[in-house]
Amino acid sequence: MSFPDSKGPNDMAAMDIHETEKVKVVGEAPPEPRRPRSKRWWVVGLALTLAGAAGAWYLLDSASTTVVDPEITVELQFAEVVTTDLLETSEYEGTMSRLDGNPVSTRREGTVTALPEEGATLEQGDVVAWIDNQPVILLYGELPIWRAMSDDVEGPDVLQLETALTALGFNESESSMTVDDTYTGSTESVVETWQESIGADEDGIVDLGDVIFLPGSVRVDALQVSVGDQIASGTAIFTTSGDDLEIGFDLPSSEQDNVSVGDVVEVTLPDLSTTTGSVTEVSTVATRPEDGGEASFEVVVVLDDPSVAAGIDEAPVTVDVITDRVDGVTALPVEALVALAEGGYAVELADGAETRLVAVEPGFYADGLVEVTGEVSPGDQVVVP
Image (cartoon, rainbow, N blue to C red):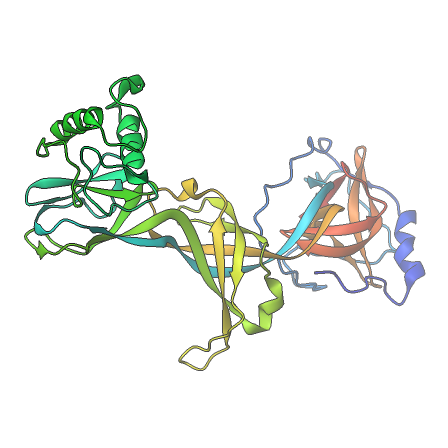
């Protein structure tokens, strides 16, 4: 946002402020420059009124001279003129949730005797379920199990099994069996050791329902069966949710130009901490709410670092999208502006133990700061109410 043209009809009068007498400040010199506040990306509106603003604005006649009673101590507050980036943002309310995964099914049939808890994360070697009091184990691999594996069986599924058991520590230094695509007596021996460790029948054979191969760890989202259920081969045990988090929010059709794929946004989490994300999708199909309000487009944001939302499955969040910005500008607090009677603006600049008015022209404003041009420089101290 920018201020309207700050020059009044009497431009010469606006410049007379350079010839006014200096105002003597009784008391201590201006304090050390204070650091600018850390940014919160929200837009600060500015009401430019010339009277009745509880001291936030001064109505001055630049042709007059201010006289200070030497018996009166004037306590002034100062702020530093800074070089900064000013951001204008739009705020949207959204919902953060985990990406849906796939259902996990078993090839074993029988009675469900134990299940993992919803929300649990299962890794290689963990039990997916107990059926007929026998464990079904998660192993890492891209190929699903399609047959029983025993002595003399050859193929990529055997290589996948031997690789997984080696990763679990049952083939230390690969001295117990050769990791290849052939199920040998050595493989059978390692399988028996593994079966003993998990409480399974020690027969040295990996049957269809003994393991489930998945590419990696999974998080149990919702159980699809209950303890005591009689299930058939191919039954889904639970659905999963991914580690990645996504945020969805509705973008009003009148603000469609505000958001594009690839935009970086700031996300405020339920604990009021902030993080960043990227817009990955902006729907091209608008939907209208049932109450007949304004149509909107669905926007999807993915967090850059999902770990900052660890332990959250679903939560309301706020998304701030940058809609306009200026970089590297000279800026000062909005309340430091002095509105002149004949038009235009000035600031009261610290000059040693005194202050003087200098003309400035305001521009873009956001976050309580306003861009200015004129006889001020970064590091200067200006009076604020």
